[in-house]
Amino acid sequence: MLRSIWEMARARTIALPLACMLVLAAAPLGGVVHGLPRARQGPPWPVVVPTEKERFVILPGGKVLVVPAVHPHAPPAIPPDAYFLDRGSGRWVDLRHHHVVVHRDRRVIWRSRSTFDLASANGLSGIVVGARGVAFQVRRTRDLFVAAGRGPERRAATNEWPELWSASGNLITVRLPQHRRFAYLVRSPQGERLTTLATDVPLDAADARATDDHGTFLYWDQDGILERTDGSTTVRLASADSLGLRGYPGIYPLDGGLIELLSRDWHAVILRDDGSVFATASAPTDGSVAGFGDQVAAPDGSAVAYVLTREEPPQPSTVFVLRAGDRRGEPVYRVPAGKGLPPTWHGSWLLFADAGEGLVVIDPDGARDAIDLSELGDRLEMLGDGLVARWPHWSGRSAHVITRSLNR
Image (cartoon, rainbow, N blue to C red; front, side, top):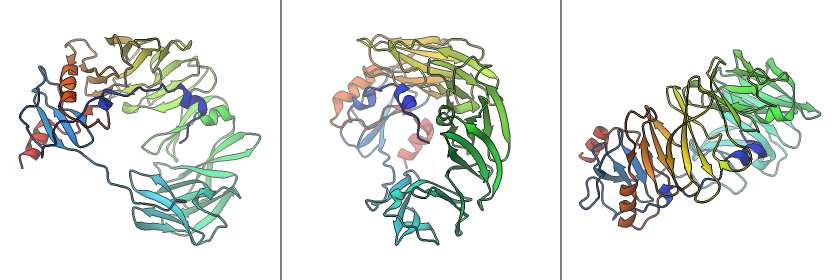
């Protein structure tokens, strides 16, 4: 969903990452290439340094391999007045002979039975497509149309737009009846209203609502209660007042079943999926630091990491970790200069890159020294002539699988 201007503004400006400063080596076919440097100490899991033409993979033993770059499936060329619903799945929508048409790549997956007096697909103010159906709002009339499965659409309501197809298969919608007060409803795949989740929701609260990748809807109701629904069962999690938060904090689902609530005065509360408090943190709001709010949770929900960067040159950065019960972040790694990117987890390890070309693997528990891969990054930069397209990241495959695939 689109975020508010404030939520977009609170996200820090990320400087060019290390991945945009490294360059690729000579373009090999893949595998071990003579002349590539080695790491003095390898990471606990393969780390990928992607470039525009090749990917360097740093293995746990320190060896560097070159594997073919992964190029995402190129989306089809679409008409100028069409637009993508989801580039990853290749879904897009356009208007053909005044019929709303949904495509996946070059195949039509749904076509409205009715025609609409629209100049282009831009006349639709919202459209969601799922396994259970298609729903959209016509901008000019504000009418909501719902089609079950890939069947015909029917007009279901006015002044209402679709939010998401929920995990239960029901449709969650947002209604704006009057005076900038919102309501959330649940409808069946046929468009019939099943229940009303909340009414009289103010704009600030509506702007903070969120969805996750599992078809869950998180929202503040009119009384400032945080609720979660899968379109069938609704759970009350906590109130903003009981958490000591002002207004209607932004809602950000994290990995491991955790939920971040971030207020405008940079107070964060991390909740478990049952609504209990996992940890809290805060940061100065005087503009002296950036990065607070970009929290990343461990996959098992055991910890949360974030980076604070001082805005004054040379912009030193500190990586903090929150564990259960913490009231403030514990600093686990510092760099004297260079804006830090949000770290990423693999098991209990953190991979951290900064704009000063630093690349390190951190053990947040402090039982093991940080593994500094920065020198290796510098040497890779000297080898080639192609700018890196993305920043380094953990590999999705083990060293054994990577090596075996190259030896086939």
